[in-house]
Amino acid sequence: MKIIIKSTKLDLTPTIEDYAKKKLETLQRFLKKFEKESELEMFVEISKTTRHHHKGDIFYAELNLSLPHKMIRIEEYNSDIYAAIDVLKDRTKAEISKLKTKIIKKRK
Image 1: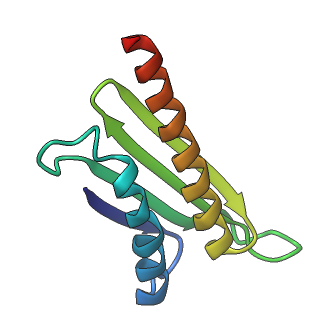
Image 2 (image 1 turned 90 degrees about the vertical axis):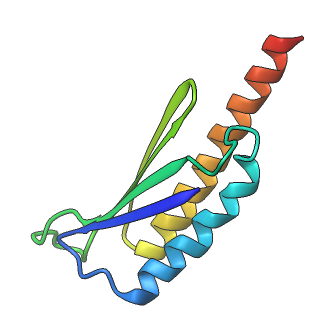
């Protein structure tokens, strides 16, 4: 699985990039069933939404993952960029698990 990270309106520091890659690489073990030769690509966008919020910055994290018969797209807004990445990972894991159980039920 290849993870591609893009930043918008935000300086992507190596710390944030490493954190995102480390968190999202854990999803690879759930995706083994869907990939044969590591052809899956995960597109992640991390950005700051606007500069005019009164109570601090709001960060945005988006994940796009194209599986053989399904496109997973998840968005998360949070005041902490690391928390947004964590929730994004958890929601993606839940979506992959839901898809796997759906495929298993279909086979039976």
